[in-house]
Length: 106
Image (tube, rainbow, N blue to C red; front, side, top):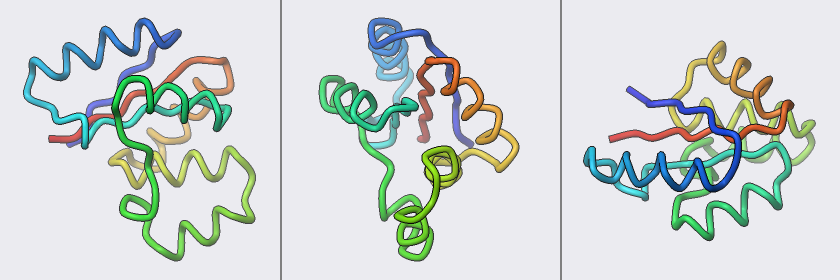
């Protein structure tokens, strides 16, 4: 089961990820999502967390996302990281507000 956290900024994300570390979550299974791709990439790189990609989405969904809106792409990646379709839709709405979503799996 995936853990989903909503935070305001990268500082809060770092704090939450450190808490996940103490709970036994590997950073290889922690994903940080931001509405803007560059922001998400920068935060994942700085915090040594994973970017959801081909492994999480699957080849066909990954290919489809090349031609989808950013919202569709984010929802697909969050589902690939362990959220249900409804959870991903709700999380994407939070991203639209400028928040970050952290998804962790054991």
